[in-house]
Length: 182
Image (cartoon, rainbow, N blue to C red; front, side, top):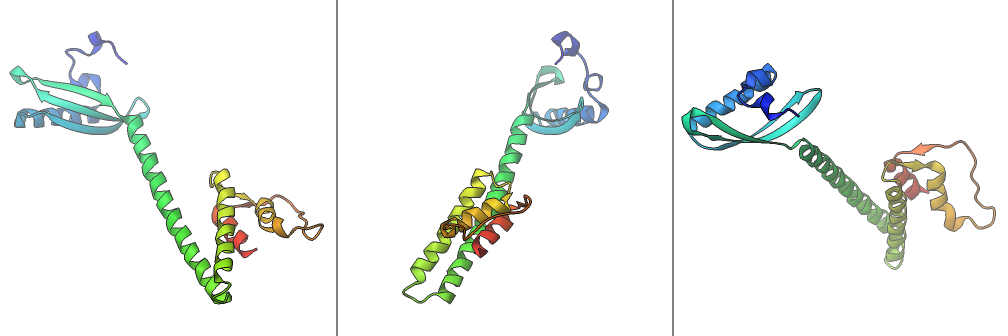
C-alpha cells in the first residue's frame, strides 16, 4: 500500500515495527551467510490485521539481498478452515460408524435371523432421514418439533399424534439420538 518512492532505499527499521524488522534482518543475514536463495513464511500483526507473507530472498552482488514477498494471509485462512472442516468430518464419520455398529447390535439383539435384515434396514433408513434433515440445516441443529414430525410422520394417521408446546432447539447429536429413540 505504499508508493515505490516511499519504500526504495529505506531500511526494514524505517518501514516496519521493530519486531518485524528484526525478523526480516535475521532472514537477510541467513541468506548472506549461506549465499543461497531461501524461502521464508512469516506471520505477524501489522496495521491491525494478522498477515502471513511468503518471501523469497536471494543474494545480490555487493551484499545486498533481493526479496519478493507475497501476502498469503487469505490462503492460510482457507487452509485452516479446510483443516477444521476435515477434522470435523472425520469426527462425524467416526461417530456415524459407531452409531451404525450400535444399530446393528440392537437389530441383532431384538430380531431373529429372519427379521434382522428388515430391522437393520429400518434403523439405517431412520438414521439416513435424520442426517438428511440435519444436512439441510447445515448441521447447526434442528427443532424438537421438526425431529418429532420427521420420526412420527409414518405413524401419524388421523389424530394419533399431535404436537404442542414452545419451540425447543436441538443440537445435532441430540436430534439423532432422539430420532432413533422415537
